[in-house]
Structures are given as structure tokens and as C-alpha cells.
Length: 309
Image 1 (cartoon, one colour):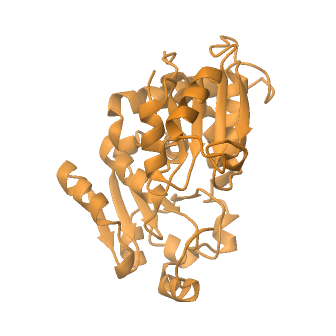
Image 2 (tube, rainbow, N blue to C red):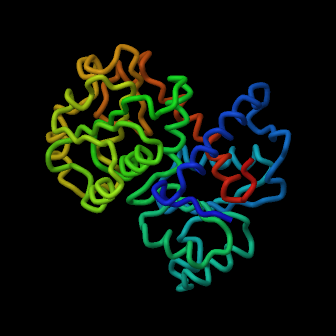
């Protein structure tokens, strides 16, 4: 049993095994329907419990398909439907119940501490489906997508992030160190990654550059990533933040500073941070990016269940 909480805490060799397994499984599914099971049916009879404290479209749907294709099943629960919420049951007791009924637990939460606490008391693996400081399943899938599109190991590519410093970027930074790729970050002066992230970069000698000029960050990039500037629960002066990011909008002019065959990726949902022509244009691979969540999350599940090849 292995947890999947933060990319920075998982060995690079294990992350690479997950990606390589996902590549093989995707190829083998070419002629199968979405709910057809993989021929080896590796998680037959297994139950994944999913709990969402925050809205979810892609994570919810992709994990549903992932466990189904592996031969298992899933159930979704809400915290306000449990005694953990208003009923007053301790997290430790809830963890024991989850471990009794389920084989794995996927949590999308507004609390990093809650994931840490659950990991202490669960006797089944926990997967971080998103937390305030990390979105590891999204970013590992993004690495898979980049290598599929570029047909190269990501360590040979220049990766760029334009936008806010958030949980997705934190995981991308961790991935850049685990997979040894160059990462340029373009963000306004007061929006750089938090101190604990910067300290981790320094400790691990990451190849990361931060620019307060989007054009400099995008120069010679093979891939440009972005995310919504104003997230759902962003407790900031939204008018000011949008103004601060005005010169960081990803449009055709900004993309011209990247390589001619540069790819645009966005974890969704989108906002005003990207122009319509780029988001829906030939350089954008956002729909493939969303689809690949299923394939990579299947291999993450196998990793957690100790079934990875």
C-alpha cells in the first residue's frame, strides 16, 4: 500500500513507472469502449471511495472511469453527509470506517492537514485529488500528455508556466525537479511561489527561473501551461488581481515568443487568462490533456494498490 499525496515525496523512479504503465494501457485500449474493462482486470472487486469537499468535474469523472476500466467500482460521498461533518465523529474514527468498507480513498479537500491526518489513520491508500498546496494527479497526467505530444522525454524540453502561483504550479515545480526539466515561471512581482516552495527549490537545486515579464518566460518554450487566475474560492480583491495579470494573458503575440511548434495546455476550467483563438486553436491540446487524466490515474491506482507492473 502506498499513498499518493505530493509528487515531491514520491521517488522519481516510481513516477516514471506510473507514466510508462499508462502509456502501455492507453495503447491497449484503442479498440475498447469507455466502460469496457482492461483485459487483465487488475482491480476486480476493489472499491474506491471518493470524497469531494470542493467542486470537481474532470477529477470526479476521470477517477470513475479509471477504477471502472481496471475492474473495480467507486462511490462518491460528501463531507456533510458523514458524521465527520456535523455529527461530531473524529477523523480517526471516520478513517477506520473508510478502511473497513473501502480499498482506497480519493480526497479532494480544502485542507492539506486533513489529507495528512487521514494518511496517519487509514489502513488503505489515500490519493490527493486536489488540496490547497498540491494537485499531483493533474500534473503527473500533464507530464504524460507533454511526452505523448512531443514524443520526447520531458527532461529535453523547455516548459513554461504563465499565471498565478497555486497548487497546480506547486506540483509542476515538484515535477520539474523529479523529471529534471527546465521550468520558466511568468507571474507578476507579488505572485511568486510561497516561501516553503522556494525553499524546497533551493534545497533540491531545481532548474527554475521566475520572470515578472511574460515574454521572457515564454521565450523558446516547447510547452506553455496556464490555469485560471481567479479560482473559485479565491479570497482576494478580484478586480485588482485581474488588473495585475493583464500583461500575462496568453494570446497569439505571447505565443510567438515560444517555439513555432509550441503547445498550450490548461488544466481547466478556463477564465480570461487565455484568448479564445489560442484556447481553441491548433496549438492547444487541452482536450487531450483532460482525457489523459483517466489513463494516468489508472496507473496511479495500480501504484497505490501495489499492482503496478
